[in-house]
Length: 209
View 1 (cartoon, rainbow, N blue to C red):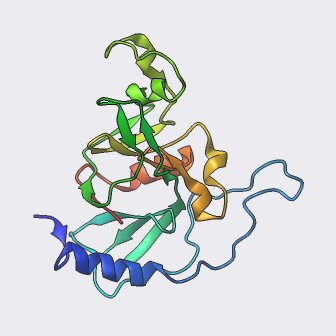
View 2 (cartoon, rainbow, N blue to C red; view 1 turned 180 degrees about the horizontal axis):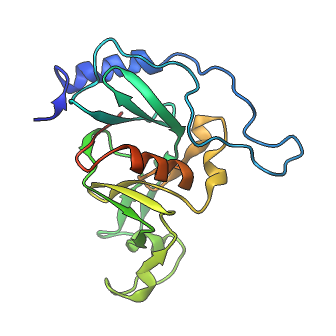
């Protein structure tokens, strides 16, 4: 059975020590003239190797590092791929009654439950309340938004997914704090999300911390 090595807290301590080192300088993500964005969806900014696997699992596993706003794919103790990510803003939306949300990315051990190309996002109530619009019926056509999750989604359960985006520019800022842009999901560029989907399987563990 897949579980966090030794205990969740030990794994978090190891991961924090592993990923706390400063990120080495990279080529600018933006063109000097402010025009075309230069971006590699598949790269590691530094060697990342753990003393022991962060998750007790025979295959690959995903690590979402919230402080760095970055997704890593590990094999054993070594990160073999990574990409910048967008995560929850932490914003609170309160419209009274049951209409209260805090847009955090949850921490813990999850897993890829299913994967989908060209997903259609079923917008929750907050999507409408946030923009001052009336909330439609649960199955109203206005809730089903093509492209709202980019071209790829890896569903983790509890309404959380690693998915693409129609606004990749929000993920290309080199400052991790500027990439806190989601309502809780983990956003990647479409290219990175599709690459990750082809590198993992349903059942792949996902450690978020």
